Length: 132
Image 1: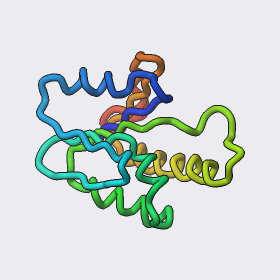
Image 2: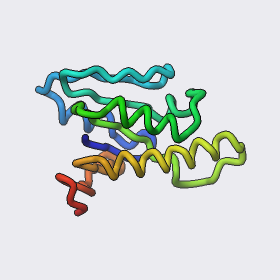
Image 3: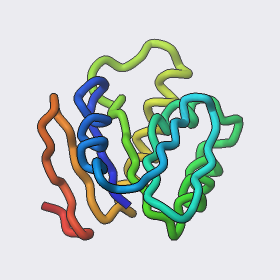
């Protein structure tokens, strides 16, 4: 698994599109509240934070469902870092921020590669399980 993480509108999707220019892949946009990750080819999972915000599952069950969905699959996650900046006043938004932080930690721990995108610049944080 490869995790691409960065702030909103920092160039994560463009980076992934360039990375996969000549690679067959499927793009799964979770913003509609759906989470079905197909097998067989490289899969880009985008906007998982939207799915997490909409799922009725308890956080621990949601995280386990995601981890089970990706097991044995060639997946790239595009994660929007929502944990920086101003803490939301709304309790629901704070819970989402915290849940995303915990989910992202699990995904990054499992990932073979982690790349941070900061205003279009890519920085490798982890490669083949080795923290750089």
